[in-house]
Amino acid sequence: MTEQLSVKDWLDQGLKTLARRGFTALKAEPLAKAMGVSRGSFYWHFADIGAYRAAILTHWREVAAEQVIAELETIPQGGDALALLLRRAFSARLALERAVRSWATADAEARAAVLEVDQRRIGYIETLLRQAGFPDDVARGRAQIFYWAFIGYALSEQALPKPRQQAAIDELLRMARR
Image (cartoon, rainbow, N blue to C red; front, side, top):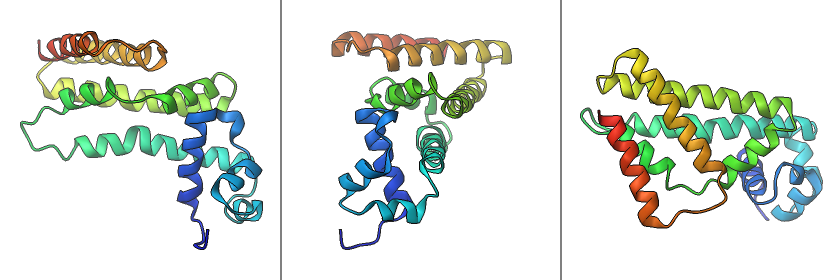
């Protein structure tokens, strides 16, 4: 590479590596090799692998929750943000989601990041349901149910045929509207 890499370049590569090969692949030497640079470039941006992994988790929180929510917040009043969120969540490729959750089973910092993202996402779904007119207790319960459904989907390694997947999404949307 002739251009100097940025912190974001390293973090984006880290998310790709995490999704493809898991958290044990987040090491300076293989990452540098994959990016076509020396290991020194890694250490220019990060004090050590621990600092890099912490930055990866922060970046994942931004990508997996905050950017999604920010995008949904741009939907004009009267638009159906919840429907868009459900369709997007249940049709996405979720290798990164599975990889971070796997990492969280072995690492307290990753576990804390996952819990933070889970709470943020559930809270946002609850807000959307309240905005749709559901009482607080119903919004809270349905937000949790929708999120549990998403986690089950995300962790499932068995893909559904498109018609069955669409039927499940349609049922979730019916729940979101009643």
